[in-house]
Structures are given as C-alpha cells and as structure tokens.
Length: 383
Image (cartoon, rainbow, N blue to C red; front, side, top):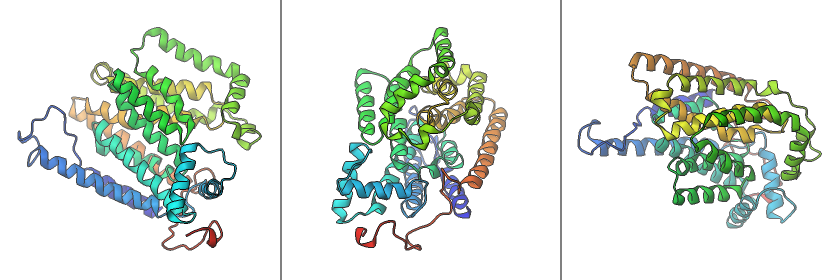
C-alpha cells in the first residue's frame, strides 16, 4: 500500500510540470518561460520519466492481479497449441514472444502489455486532455492504472479505444476508416471492443430530444427482455456458459455507485454546458457517453461483467472533467470545483487501496520477481 501511494504521489508531482500547449500558440511569443519549444521538451522528458516508473512497476510484478495465474496457464495452452477461447491476436503475440524467448516467458508477456497500456494512456492524456496533470491524477487515484494489472487484454483494448476517439471527434471519411481499423485490430485481442463502433459513432452525433428519450427507453426496455439479451450474450461469449458469471444473480444496486458518479459528471456538464459542452465536439461526445453509460448500467445490470462494456463509456470522463474545468472563467469557482474533484478522488483512492486485496481485484500485496522466486509452472517450462 505504501508503495502504491508513493508511486502515485511521485508521478503526480512530476505530472505537474507538464503544460498544455494550445494549437494557437506561436513559437517564440514567450507564452511559456523559455518559449514553446522548451515546454515541449519538458513535457516529453517528464512524460517519458512517468512512463518508465509506471512501466517498471507493472512489468516487475509477479502474482499481482486476480487473473495472473489464469494468464500464465492460458499462455501455456496457447504455446502448446491447446484449446483456448482467447482471440487470435493475443494468441499470435503469445506464440511470437514465447518463441523468441525460447520458453514460456510470461513475464515478458506481461511487460509488453504493461508498456503498451501505459504508453497509450499517457498519449491520450497528453494529446486529448486540456489538463494532463488532472487527467493523470484521476487515472492514478481512481485506481485505473492499478486495475490494469488485471485482465491485461481488456485494458489494452480499452486504451486503444480511448486513443481511437480522436478520429471520431474529428470525423471524416479518412478518420472514420482509421477509427474502424484500430477497433478491428483491437478486437483481435478482446472482441468486446467492437461495441464501441456503434456507441462512439452514436455519441458523436448531434443529439435531438428524441435521442435522449430513446436512450431512456433503452434503460427501461432492456430489463424486460433480459432473458433474450442474456441468451444472445452467451452466444457471443460461449466461454461464459455454465460458469459462475452466467449463474450469478445481479442486482441493479450493484451499479448504483457508478451511476451516481455519472450523474454527478452530467450535473457538472449541465452547469457549464454553454462554455464547456455546446461548442466543443469532444466534450459533447464524452457528455453523451456518460448518459449512455447510465442507460447501460441500469438497463443491462443483469449481464455478467457489464462493466466490460460500461468502461468504454465511463473512462472518457478522465478527459471530460479536466476539459470542463478548464473552461470555467471564474478562477475562484474553478479552484473550488477542482478541490472538490481532487478530494473525491483522494477519498476513492483510500477506499480502493483498502479493498485492493479482495477477490476480483487482488493488486495487493505487491510482489516482484526481483525478490520473490516462485514459478507458476514447472521451472523447466519457464525461463
């Protein structure tokens, strides 16, 4: 726990040196001390340093993550050409890495995913957020970075989905093709990401009143069709058939904390709609996503692991909230609201760390192969 707090504090303090440089800034105008080029260099160096810290923490771990052992065994089955339910892109990557290593080097596999996930998230914050430090602060304190130690395939495609949003925001025929190609490539690692093609394109549309009503209708109608929807979901994900995920009974109350968070974000957007939403395509798209997330969590609460779909809609709030705060012209008001957001994130971080050793999370206690010498497979099967 102390390690995670230290890493969060150190990297957030470092992130404070990163400054957003608007596209309209003319080099040499002195907008930043030393000019724009110096600030660009500082941004690059600090971001690279943060990447190294976060990458090493993730890459050096062993037995950290609720499905760490599952990935080790799954990688073994892939390498031995056994039966697996994982997507072909992941299977190919496993075979390439294990073949190059000459053994079942699952530590290298986790390291590759750690590098890709960390780099993508940092790139999104640097290029798509008005405040890198606030987006990064939320990324750390909301526990998203530490959750990437679990289900690495999913968090990799989640990061790719966030990266692809830039092509939907600035939509054109060329960008639409880029967006779809990125998502199709991501689907080779986790097919759930295909859902973002209709969801993100829908969120990008200029909504009319009837569209808000339709989304509300979705939340009302879906529970009435839960049997058919569940049957379709199990056809798309046959690996869940006869598992604890499909047999568990879920209640709508399980999703109320996420719904409450989305309601709070929507309320913030409505208060500053004119300055922060109306004339910004990116914020308007994220705003629509938050509304869709509420409908999804309420309407499809009965689906196992509905969060796998919901995170595609909720995670963009890491960009939306900083973007909204940056549009508040009243400095005192902006500071007060920012303080509320920061306080809420810190309180959640404390709660997350308190529950981080529980089943389903298991990112505590932290162990590293540098100091802990236990193999998940026989030593002859590893490097």
